[in-house]
Amino acid sequence: MNILIALLGLAVVFGLAFVASNGRKKIRYRPLIVMVVLQALLAFLLLNTVVGTTLIGIFSKTFETLLEYAYEGIGFVFGGILAEGRAAIFFLNVLMPIVFISALIGILQYIRVLPFIIRYIGLVLSKINGMGKLESYNAVASAVLGQSEVFISVKKQIGLLPKHRLYTLCASAMSTVSMSIVGAYMGLIPPKYVVTALVLNLFGGFIIASIINPYKVEPEEDILEVQEEEKQSFFEMLGEYIMDGFKVAIIVAAMLIGFVALIAMLNGIFATIFGISFQEMLGYVFSPFAFIMGIPWNEAVTAGGIMATKLMTNEFAAMVSLQSLIEAGTLSERTIGIVSVFLVSFANFSSIGIIAGAVKGLHEKQGNVVARFGLKLLYGATLVSMLSAIIVGLFI
Image (cartoon, rainbow, N blue to C red; front, side, top):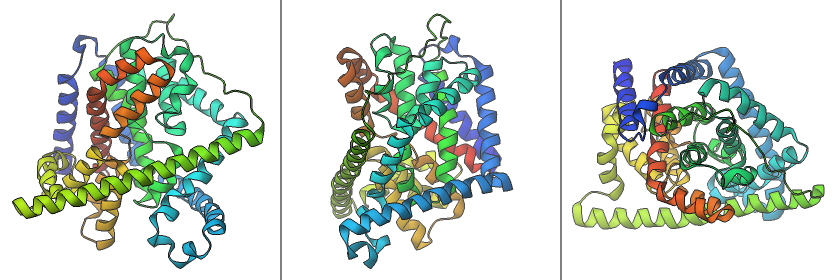
């Protein structure tokens, strides 16, 4: 039964992507089939084999260790607050470690380890996905640097890109997540699903973009020019990345305060007027999509509400809701896995403004172009999340 539902889900996702395609006759199906098969193989490897379990264990343990180091710094600044109830203080436990992880990313950038890894993984991916080197580089870089910072590394080419290539770059940025906040995600949802989503979304972004926005990059256009960061001393760089990490933590905290409070208010208003909360109403709207992703029908409304929360606000607000349900033991492992994978991306309305603003800061005209296809960008990124969740549902 799960296989039949997964096939239905794949048909719906590909159908929705095909309907929105701006060049249906240009779609190349061979790379698509290869990437879907790769997604399935990787999901099976990560979730159902000893090798995959070991790899996820190593990845999770690495982040656990890094978080423990982060807590040393947090504890020094905030004294006994952290020790009194680490799990109870979201800002300290989940958001403040972003500062430390951001510093580590800065160090790896400075010693040229990350640029080397990103560039050559991107080159390998370009052989698989049939797209250009720039698109492949950007997808990997987005998963490390973040959805706004990644455009700085390719700013030399931003102004030269046609609309269709710019869409693919922005789609990759919205479909992935920044490595600096992966540790924060692992504090809210099961780490194995975070790792799996990171891998699947990388291919999923290419799959959906290849349907919605198909094109072929000519050899003379297939040039990758990465902007080198301005030469800084080690401690200048370190201070910059630490402050960037702190800004991210504060911004996420502010957005959560606002969004969670607004949702609570809407829940109260809807419950008073209609006898049903705002999230429950959205849950019913999104429940069919939850069902075709493989979630049992008796949990589809609850899962649909969490999915809608992510889309309307951000992934953190949705993960907080999911975490409370996990702790209450009200969801099955299957639903937890599928919803968790769906949540690991930047596919929400606020990301349209973030990405358009980042591009506009580098090239005003191209920023306006991004703003115009913003809703289509979100549409595609949401389909990427659904595709990854459906694939995972086959192996839970």
